[in-house]
Length: 372
Ligand SMILES: C=C(O[C@@H]1C=C(C(=O)O)C=C[C@H]1O)C(=O)O
Image (cartoon, rainbow, N blue to C red):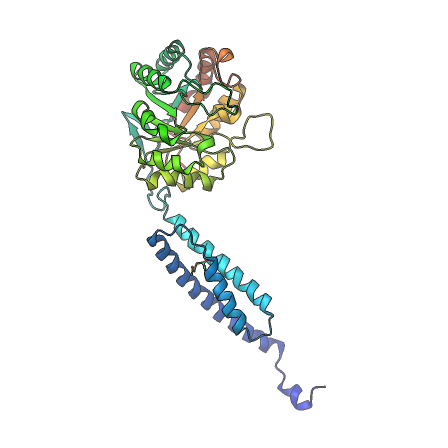
């Protein structure tokens, strides 16, 4: 029972809440000060080149100390839960500060990167480029016909796979070096740049010898050794987004290349794996808009792999250009029905003509500026 004296001494809820408000202000000031110190630790770790900000041993040490010091009334488990939240937020702060420093980020370089590869300009609001050609390089005749046809349509970048990442090890694996030699020669003869995929660190040198642009395929987007290797090659890189890669993972993959000194990276959205079955992949247009917003790199869209079917190529290409894509990647083959890979989705020459007519003037117009 409180005494009369005790009751007169008891503080009102309003009064107690006023004290809580004051404590909150002090806590906030302390947490913010802690955050400032954490940020400094984060910068120091980055400067030292430490691969990780997370330091579980350091967190454990602090929890042990807090356990010893805990005066109550909160049980130690509760104190630990609260501090673990603080560690988590601190770690996120360190990592997000790091992200602002990424070489791919617009925060580091605000103006668009424009690639000029032998006079072919990609990015920075230039008219969207077209990269076209067969899935695989199969024969001289096939490459000659395709290159000549595409040259007639003003296509300056010829694609063709010499090393093919096939789902089955028994599927056609590509012509290898013979394909590189053929693709490079035919492209040159038709005033085109040659882009082809490199799948193995051991092939980067030979592919660089023949290709004007090295492609990293979706399945290799997480192959960090290969990313580093093409980062050291003196060739522009077309980096496809992985099948199930988040935008962040895709941009980090590009960062691997830039961090080795190669700034000439073209990002390529090619659809991601979802539950949808009516398309081969799901074209992620937000990824295109976001990549344009977050990075200074050119972004193109591979409509062929995104759709996996010919009847959607025109609307998808239009949509891609509308959200700011700097180019379109499309597969064209003289006879898709007899192609050694991707029969279902490559366009024949008549199909490409229809595609061009369908996308129309959007291809001549300067790319839509990314609205930030
Ligand atoms: C601040 C640091 O980085 C992280 C955050 C910690 C913290 O908030 O105390 C502790 C360890 C790290 O996981 C650090 O290493 O000291």
